[in-house]
Length: 199
Image 1: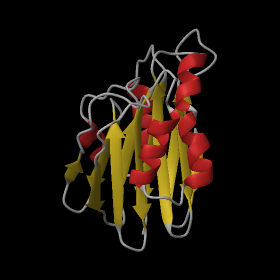
Image 2: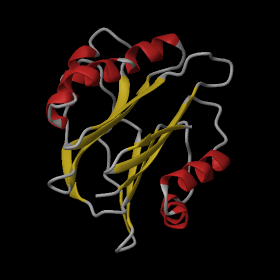
Image 3: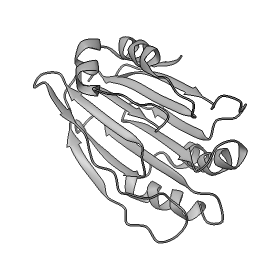
């Protein structure tokens, strides 16, 4: 478990390769500053080194450009996928001052936000397909959040039957991480990130 502790966000990260592979085709990136938190998961098509090559585009770009908007970053990701295998990508950027986050996804990565105060689960629907360098319809959605809200983002190597009840029961990122870790039976590359927005 990789853990990030920040005054505004707590995060736990799991990333593992498919059985028999030494390299995961999934990549991820997180960064927390005093103004914002950026989180992205990319699932390269296929598995092993060629999938890794495609998915690594995302953290490479984010290391340098994480200050940009979600729209601009998703366009960058897509441009860089040209002549690569392609990848499903989801990312969100939390703006602590404004108390909202922007979310965009192309492909089969899942994101959930559990609003503790209202017992609501926010589940934005992804755009079908994957980033490939070809012209792509992108859709960024904005959502408010409250302190204490819990989030979960995961690649398709993780299958969960009832994420809402899991998130409600867990309450904190570490417990949610442990519960998912126990529940997943995966033969695929798998990545999941649990977190709590504290401010």
